[in-house]
Image 1 (spheres, rainbow, N blue to C red):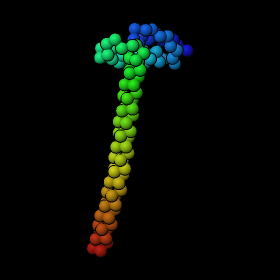
Image 2: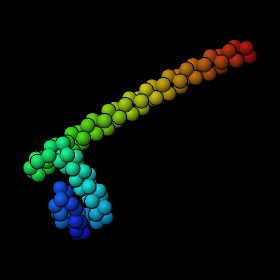
Image 3: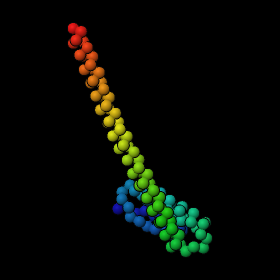
Length: 110
């Protein structure tokens, strides 16, 4: 199992991760470190643990919002699919009715 070295809040952590996940883990750690850095500017002198807790809460909020957006997008997609299927059925019924009407006209004229 690969090891990756990350840095958050001026501390280095050695973590194990899945094969090929090293770069992603480092990207995520950099994002967490960025959040901690932003908080450090907003809350000068705050204890590091408090900054880490706040960063965790901010990231959890982002995650929750993203899940909400994804769910809304999935619901919209499902609704659009249902609407498209309803429209396709209505068009098929209309075409069938027109073809039947034209067939009756041709049969009546013959």
